[in-house]
Image (cartoon, rainbow, N blue to C red; front, side, top):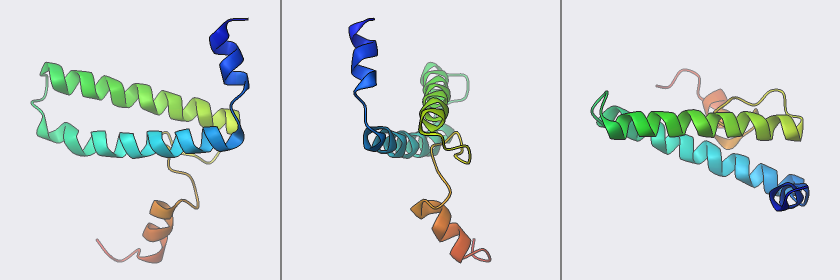
Length: 92
């Protein structure tokens, strides 16, 4: 077993949940910046690929936690962001 594999075995549920929150926040921030970059440019392409990689990481962490309802962005049912959306469905 590699040292990386041993380190991941030590991760707690809380570690994974915090990582999922951080990844979700990072994805959200990246998505806000993406439209400001020149489409097809190197920065745009790099950021788009990073977003995709973070979404993959989010899905894998979600599976590890056994949360089937989580979205790839890292937002889970009951998170603060989704709760706000549920309280104000008519507001834009």
